[in-house]
Length: 195
Image (cartoon, rainbow, N blue to C red; front, side):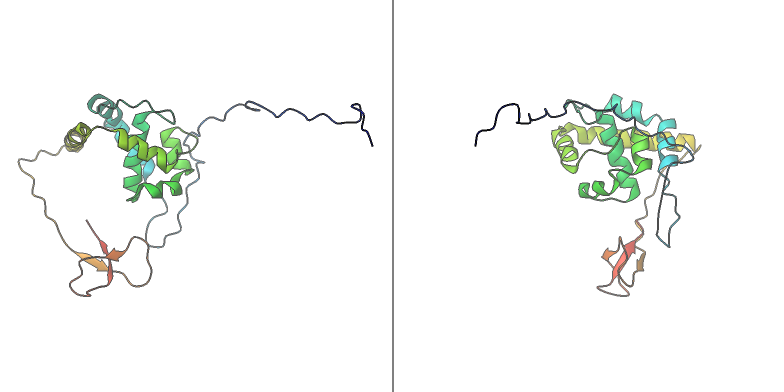
């Protein structure tokens, strides 16, 4: 059986390019969604006041003026990588792997002005590209930020004493954030460390 060319249906070419305009990052306003189901903490994470405080203390100008980053980033500007890591630490994440839980969080991506966070491997590559001298520069950023916070709070200290209080709260059951640590009263039990 022979099929003529008129009876064959031609394959349609694949759609190329972007079909619609790329959406813009969300703006934070009163309708920005935030959610929390913990019973022992407030429902508001507090990222917006922290971001506002960092803006008033001119954190971006300080970081961009102090740190020397030679890597050209494509996912987002390198300052946003640093700010994303700072805000993730503020939220309580101790590992880069935890950033996947925040990838589409409206509050965080609104602060960073991106559609979603880049994957964990992109953060790893950014951190791996930093030179060893950046550690000293980060300490300088910390010192300057501490000074700015004290000046904003009108604190004039002649000396500072750091008290490493080892008070712990024993945790019963499976609570997030608890880990086995120093616990003199209940050895081997999980605790929340306050520091």
